[in-house]
Amino acid sequence: MQIRVLGCSGSIAAGSRTTAFLLDHDVLIDAGTGVGELTLAELVQIDHILVSHSHLDHVLAIGLLADSVTRRRSALARPPVQVHALPATLAALRTHVFNGVIWPDFTRLPSERHPVLELRPVEVGQLLELGGRRIEVLSAAHTVPAVGFAVHGEAGAWVYSGDTGPNEALWQRLAALDVAALVIETAFRDEERALAAASGHLCPSQLGRELARLAAPTDVYITHVKPGEVAAVMAEIAALPLRHRVHALESGQTITLGREAGTDVLRQAWPPAAAAGAAD
Ligand SMILES: [Zn+2]
Ligand SMILES: [Zn+2]
Image 1 (cartoon, helix red, strand yellow):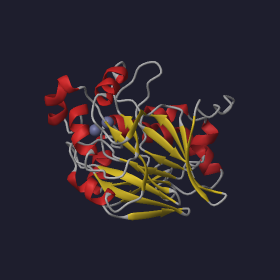
Image 2: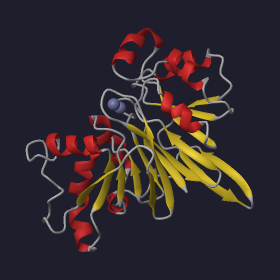
Image 3: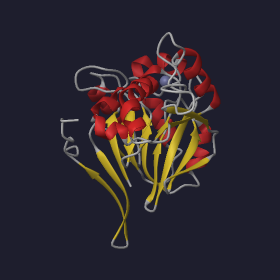
């Protein structure tokens, strides 16, 4: 199993894309502007989109992806792309995105019988089995209903917090999990701690209190930092007394979760995997 970071910024600027991860070739985890890194041929292969919550920086590319792949998936007689999210998140997408005003209703296009998107409700604690991959829905604590995800691999779980503030339920669940890597947000610097608290996000000092709940030393990857803030946020985190190995998550990074020659491996690759050809 391989996870490719398509976008991991809290907002956009040149070189900064919002949250999207590609699991193998066919599962998207969140659909922020990072999805624009994929070629059309890669977009056509996506069969599942797991959505952490309804905020624009995580859902913006769902409708655009649908628009891009409709013709080719129809020609290939591919089934609808399944969009997995909490019922409240799906309701928000129906009401506020796929409403014929902001964007066409791709759950009924190109035809009601064979739409390009299908909305599938999930709940916290559910274990999704997608083509042999097991993905668990984790709780998150944000300003709207939100979840994180754990991708279970033979070498442990790759865990993505989603957008979240302090989250007791996450640490209770992770205490019973073999966590190979934790991707967790830190959206604001400490000087903006009031804004972080009000908006359901973490700042470095709060991250430190949260990570103290994770007993085993773990590779922790920081995500969702605003453009231009990464160095400052990472410096504040580096000053914390943490037992974990903390890194800034980087767009283009690939993480392989699997077992090789009988040895558990979690391998990160830099520089980013070579970009696929631009022809498509
Ligand atoms: Zn959010
Ligand atoms: Zn966000």
